[in-house]
Structure formats: C-alpha cells, structure tokens
Image 1 (cartoon, helix red, strand yellow):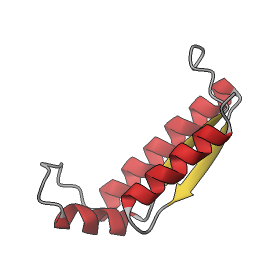
Image 2 (cartoon, one colour):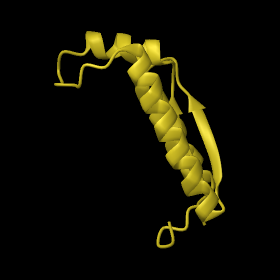
Image 3 (cartoon, helix red, strand yellow):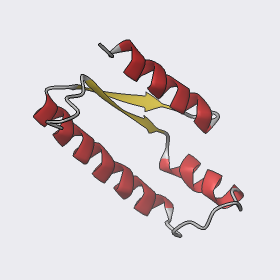
Image 4 (cartoon, helix red, strand yellow):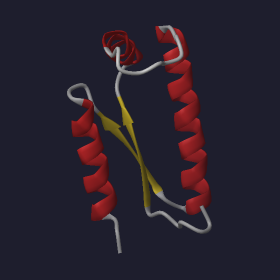
Length: 86
C-alpha cells in the first residue's frame, strides 16, 4: 500500500448464490468446490482485507455490484480506477 498509494480500492461483488451458479455452469476451469456459505465467507474475508488496505492507504473503498455479465463489473472497476487516477 505504501508503494502503490491508491486513492480508491474497488471490489466487484455479487451474491454468493450467483457466484455458485456461475461456477457450476463454467466447465472451462478447475475450481475449488465451495458451497454458497463458503463463498460468502470468502467474500467477507476479501472485504475485510480490502477495508484494512483502505485504512492503511487512506483510500476510498467502493463495492461494485455486478449481477449481469462479469465483464461488466470489470469494466466498471476499470472506469472507477481511471476516474481516480492522477
């Protein structure tokens, strides 16, 4: 965080149930077999980590809700980062 000095940190999120459904349909990757509760726990850990990072960096945390195509969330994240770039 000291080296990067971000102004904003974002995380693309959606419901754990939707992540589970997407993983079940995606046969192109070998994934860990997590149930919905485990996925939610993993998301909570990720949020906690990022919130800690924002505190150290004095940055803004922005959750990006994405319930459609995952690439839409990625585009939103890129736009967010670009809007806060120097």
